[in-house]
Length: 248
Image (cartoon, rainbow, N blue to C red):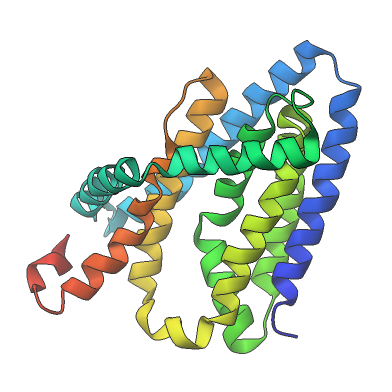
């Protein structure tokens, strides 16, 4: 059944979020603080691992880097585009609108943060892209089912720290991952293994930024950096006309 992987993924996130919300109600403040720091550390290393796997190569025992200029250009140009569109503000506004409708004003002060952080973590990464393509092209949901287990555990921790806003990430997950599954036959010819690696690498850097926000209570505008994920695709298409871009 095509789409089964995304359905299972949404179910595990919903179950994990429910368990996390129940735990949140009975946790003292000091527990929430420590859980948040632990979540930030986990997110740090998820991001670092993904970024390093895309940036580093080992040939005959020698470590070298690749795609560094692509990373720099994508983040700089992506930040400019994101700031011009002010994506972060729109995400926050949508989260606040949903909070007033579903959570109640003041009921959950971290509702918006939970929505944005969980949406980015669940949707950015190679497993979401490759798994959705496998599900859509071959009817094989195994990658997404493995991802579903990881996301379910992450949802428990996110919801225990950030509350009910994590539920709203289900909408993002369904639209993003489900959309790739439905469009797989049309977009697969454009997504080479190298391109998927590049997109995943930039996504992992954004995951690192999420961890930074969680750990230090800072505000890197990760939402405004989202266009950076799409720029490797743009460079890939332009390389047909400007071959030098293919060396980034």
